[in-house]
Image (cartoon, rainbow, N blue to C red; front, side, top):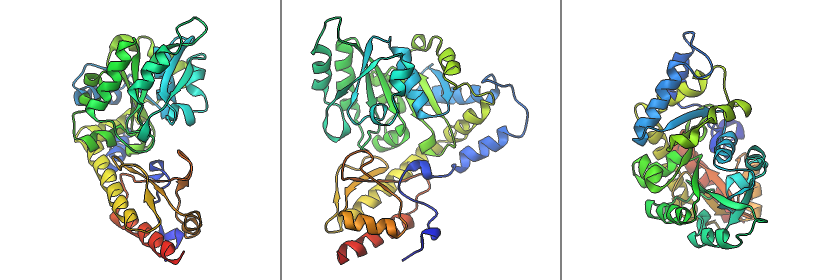
Length: 351
């Protein structure tokens, strides 16, 4: 049994990981000289152009500090205070943003939808929009989709279109929480455009932090008109970095030669390796399809406790009750996965 101090990598969150070398190198390069502040620098322009290149679209791009700001400010830009936002009941904007979407949208209400495997049932969109049409009900305005979902599953191209087409029937805009968007693209092996604007998405919150960037997410508006005055929202919301190049430069390192997808593919592969190991352990059940870099499993409580005592860090009940979430990162190794599985197998056998 290894000591906890000998474990440089854990599975509680992909936020635990360090900075990918490509992002680190770009930040170091940006640090070498003085640059113009508040986003008028060459690094921010270059990063935005690379985003436009990978999405094959002349989109508007903004860099912010974190996912809460990206989601909340972009949703606020699509809503008035009397509108509502439709999202899955497990969506991050509902369960883990401390009311930030409602706060920044001046009170727009989140309406929760059901759906198996973390995916919104299209019929739920129809139900929520048609539940009431009177002036006393917050008027549905936006559909928020999470890709990859909070339980690690991924909407296929056809699944996305089914939901965005239903949204369009009812005049809804479509927002995508893409904290793990890279993992979804890697899983589906499609062009980023195919699961965003070509599929009916208006604005994407493109996650960088969980993909190997130190700090920062990109808000990508595929319709430039929707981005009008978004720069003012960023400033008011405390998201206009004075030294913006340190948010944007890492994106150049990750995007220019495809490192973002390389690292996402690796994290996904480690999750599949995890799944294979867990399925072979009696008493342990994998809960969902492993489409991205997350594995959800039911582990006997006594065994779970002993795993923590051995120094392993992972969360149980953070998304769904009684299920442990095991997250793989860009720097997870096969040895990390195998060591966890070995300890779990030993403890489960001794139970």
